[in-house]
Image (cartoon, rainbow, N blue to C red; front, side):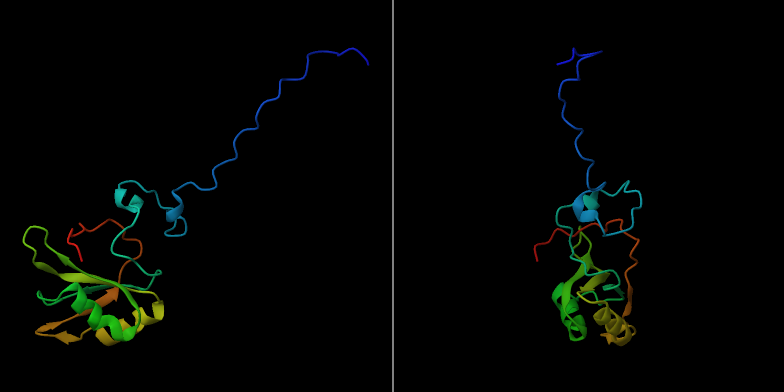
Length: 148
C-alpha cells in the first residue's frame, strides 16, 4: 500500500449531540406564542391550576355573589357544556370570596354560549359579567391553597 502522505486521519470522534428539539420545556410548546418567558415562574409549574381548556374556551366571570363556591360556579355554567374547571378566587387571609372567578370548558362553542346566556345573568342581587379570559395575560393570580 502507498505510504501515508501528510497527517494521519484524525482519531474517531463523536459527532456533536443533535440540537435540542425544543427551546422551552415541552409542555409550553404550542401553549402560547413564544413571548419571552421572563418573570413567569408559574408557567413552569408541573400541573398549573386551575385547569384550562383550549384558547377561547376559558371565561372570566365577575360580580359573583360572595357566598358562591367553586361548586356553585360549576353548576351555574354546567348547562352550556363540559366544565373542566371552575374556580372562585378567595382572599388568602380572610377566606372571603373576591367576587370573581374563572370557568373553563373543553370547547370554544360551550364558552361562547355561556357568554351569551350568562353575561348579565342575575344571581341574588348581582348581575354577572362574563367574558373571555385574555389569552395573553398569563401572570398568575395568587392561587388559593384550599383543598377542593
